[in-house]
Length: 424
Length: 185
Image: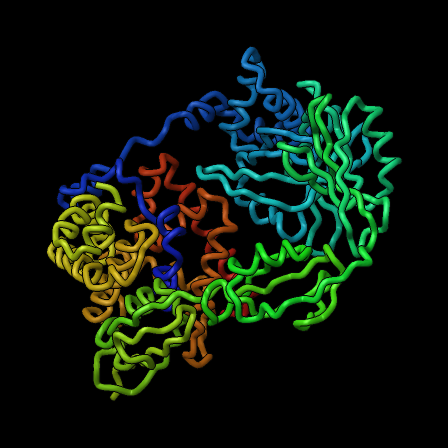
């Protein structure tokens, strides 16, 4: 690969990336202005805040930086702690954090914490830190309490819209209390090295509105779960259903009514709320013959199937069949079911339903430059393969395409573009 | 006029759409072309070509971000024009400097055959940019997509020119490692 290839490839990255990163803000551009003037106009004085910080420490800058590095754990700890509380009445703390921000030292700001997650923003990562900071591979946060690790965060990220990055880390649900988010950095060999961030304290206080935590009892014995739930001042709304997998008397599913389904960690509910529990009646001895629904439209058979006592589940599958067509029927364990088979009443039948594909009309791309042709075709959800050929047309021009122009094809098909190398 | 209205004018084949697109994004596109070609008349022609290509490709194309779609078109047109005018891609504008810098990301001696998996490279670049801190991605793309120089980027993002240069240097080194790891070099 050559640098020219790279320069071209950078021009092909997704519109979303270009939109977010490459283009200067419209506010700095006057669309009717002459280009030279546009450039000149966008020059703004550089923000003065950093200079101020440097002036404060002028002369002793090196010493201050060295001192800060030496004391960084202590300073970060203080700053992070103050920042995490979001208390507006903290002038001394804010002063300190302003200075730290101006000195470009990294710190964590806690935006939000729930019983099973914490959302943070990472500030002031230097390039050195960035090179070490790779949350996907080997950096991790752990939740500590009283000097010991109590949970390991799964990696999860939601990218911030602005300059800073916002991450939400999930962990298994923890009771209310004060915790520390501890940064554990490992090198590529798995050895622990200096953390980038000092620990930051955060509070889990989900009971502040008097909420009650109900764990997920799915699969467990109903009577035992009922006693525990009642003892927390909650009510139980019991329903029954046949189930081929969950043994009789055990819980098939739980939900908090309007609060929605239970997560695998459990759920916070208001005291006095109903917990709706579906309890298994075991396998229903009664059977029904499974009608032949293959090739039928899912929406048309749904009501009939439910009336027959079939617990219908829908699974969508990419296929060229028209949208909504049933392609296959399986039981809950993915074994294929044949039409006419006797199945236990109320057992699950998974209908594999076609998503169909969109039809697109292939435009005439011959004579276009390859980049524009590729962009247009990819915009139509066609996979583009580019082949070079000796041709007298100028290099980079499309000289042939594998699908005739104005042909209607299924999207996600392959379109081969033959491109001249200019050496014909 | 917003993107949706402009796109619906394109769909109705109403040429007012071109005027509206030009009003909304013409300045930006001229800036992009200007950075590559370094000549205002060439840049102006590039913007006209962009509008023509957009008119011919929308529909069927359905851009999600019209501004980015047009900017990509302009960049391609300007770059192709630049290449045909400067066979070696050495000359005026920001391209020679940008190419010298990007050379750090690719092997010094290129003995591999010129069979490049363009889709894979583009997808990998997208991944790379998404994994960068937002500010670093902005600096990198403003330099190598929009071809702004370090001074302009510094002024626009209100940071020092040295920071811009240092971020660019680090990011190029990272890109080199990344491309090597992805076996795209």
